[in-house]
Image (cartoon, rainbow, N blue to C red; front, side, top):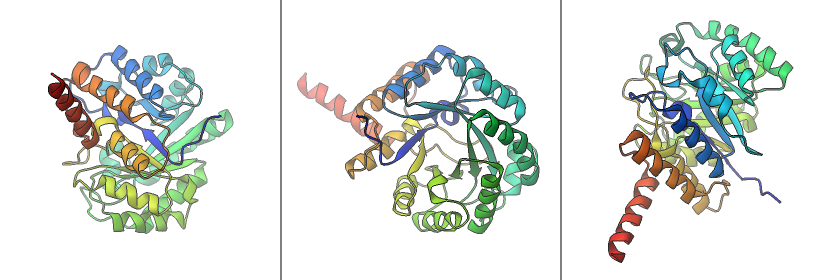
Length: 309
């Protein structure tokens, strides 16, 4: 009998992690990455984005990646969709979850998608209606929940109000994103408490960036406040082009290690995940990634080999 994990680690590396990589990555490598991640035990993986290639050239092969990714029982793939056209592409590829994105701050939303928050919500309406009719899951990312690079502080009450509007549209899960990685544990606890007063706690996820090195502490704070779904990106890949100075996401290996060492099951094979990230570093990106557990484990392997020699 399969044991359900106590927390869900939602892998966003193939989309959020790769989208800003400057050198084109081969479709075959993306497919292998998704396959390796699925076989490591990750059950929810965001694999691409159906945004115009003009805006995200790295993901121009979205249709091929989504259509050819190997399917596994219990693994659900998602992709970003900016509008109904993007949703139609997602449906054609047979993906299980469509993801929407909106910012909690007006300026960041305009920088990111060229319209205001209210207009974004109206754009989501036909997508949400189709998703409900088709039985497709619907996720929404809310960016800049801990602070905006253009407007500064963002009130938790404003985030809660936006989350409630998204739930009313038919969104199943809301991922609260600390886009610039400025949040701290006390702020995360207060944010979760405030938003969960407006929407069910079980429908809240956290998406934390590590700009100030606090992402893992914020994951712990979110868990202590009742959140059970955490976005992460293998090796700490990622960043936002419309958030100057923001670093990558919290590393998947770090999140898995944190929970497993605390006796909280994730269902992820950490060794297989480290192997996948090491493969990505050496054979695809040809550069080192910042994940702490990744660096520690690879360093230990290297020292063990040298000691054996």
